[in-house]
Length: 151
Image (tube, rainbow, N blue to C red; front, side, top):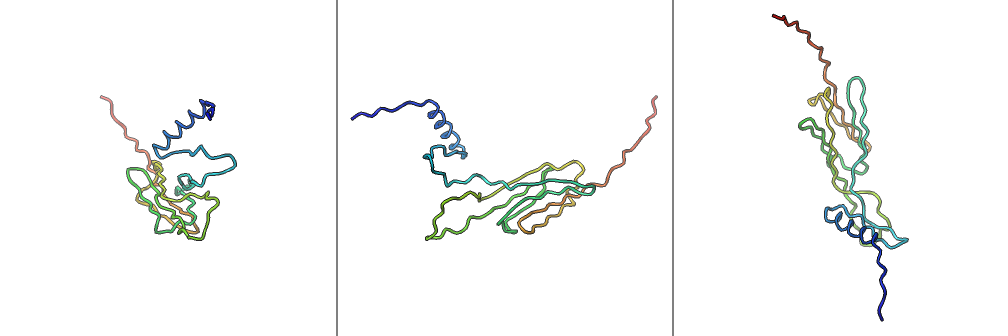
């Protein structure tokens, strides 16, 4: 018996887009049967707040369930970089996951330093799943005024 297949050009376009994105490691997993959800997780980037006062810039990053030893802060070429990893729990043989929404794995966040930040005066604290990076501001430079004689 022959079956008739209905051609849906939009679905074919979505399939092609999904294959292209997957080839770059960014697949969307679109073909999930109705009523079901995928167990895949998205790439993880911790949320960050950046603020300033008269004396410093403050970067606060939320890093729940991240070990302090798995976090690194570095400054290079005018860029501050936060890098680390949130590790997935050990798989247990008798445990079934019905949904995994939290993301795991390595992360990397980079931010350009403001011109008045002093890269040699940086400190970082890690407490209760929050990383605080303190960037002191440079002493204000007083503009020099030099009279140049016109000849």
